[in-house]
Image 1 (tube, one colour):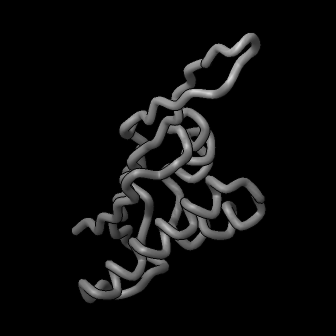
Image 2 (cartoon, one colour):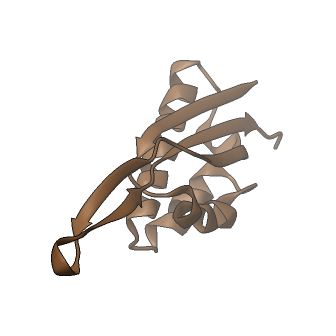
Length: 112
């Protein structure tokens, strides 16, 4: 049985958060929290919050123990892109994009 948690409209691009996801993919949820607590990036704080949310969902669904839960799937999809403008030289405006992302986490029980 699986437990899911989502984080929608994160103001960090999927490209920036995927390397952190690759660190914890396939590990146990408790070990992933320890690994991410070492990093000081804003993305690691978001992933810690997402894992804690999934563990709370597992507790709500009466799973036996949080120690037996493994990250079976974690992914970052592109979210909506906000188009913004910044002042440039000679009275012009330069366009830039502000990306966002949607995170999905799935925990699965592991025997043992």
